[in-house]
Length: 397
Figure 1 (cartoon, rainbow, N blue to C red):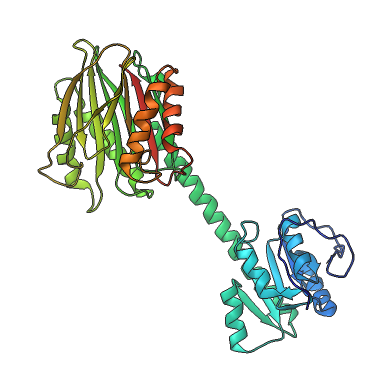
Figure 2 (cartoon, rainbow, N blue to C red):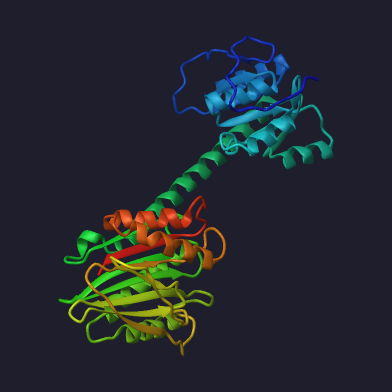
């Protein structure tokens, strides 16, 4: 038996036989929406019978008599289903199936094995390789048609479900994005945000709230967990911010009220880390309250960055939570950096990520605000691939 070297990136053979695909023109035009079934079998009689049967049912077919030709056709034609013999002239059908499972091009294509081997051990091996069904030879045309149609319907149902779920996630992501203030939506406040979502929707959240003529609140939060459920809790947080973020409530009082409300509604194991920063432009003071979140960083026009280190409990987990508070003086030209932990934990310990961020801030300070934020993200991440959602907010103070 010839050595089988699977390669979905190879050029499809054009020879009529000797491992090449064999094309049989359909007896009548078929709709472009008609599914395509690839038959991989070096038994010409069995292949002809299956093709004739499926075409009579309105299903398009293509055929290959070897492993290499089959993989080439998968790449070029993207079949909806594969009928695959186990014993091929240039390899094993099991190897073909395993290779398909490991390749994004073929992993979504159901494979039905067809073979004259009827022992249980071989059938189990076929399913272990990734097959979804097993048809024994000599084939019954009616049985082949029934099984193929069943699996095509299942495949279409899975695709429709996946499309529906993707649409729902996209709508959820759009709804979540609508909860967060766009830079142009807060007059008189200069800020920029970079968001990188591992999923389309997630638990990282920010807000910018102008609550008075000279008072602006900046919020960056991160919900525990990174599944879609965390997205719903960010909506609850936004609602509470709208209720409690007022000039008469100090930042610490706002977090205490939000914590009290969230402790009543969040399920066990769900909570937020949160940084709340209030800028009073009249007094030139920035008040920060930290709830288990990475620290705020002040980047002055001249001089080194200031890391506002604070301790505090998370929000929504403890009814008697304590939140650290700090008040710092700022001058025009200073910039605020607030971010979620995905930025500083993408490549090793948090301390190393913070060190990279602090080192990147002074050289980037001369850039426009949006470019400044992007540079901070790029320099802090380096070559690391983020595995957690990231929100970075920069604001001119």
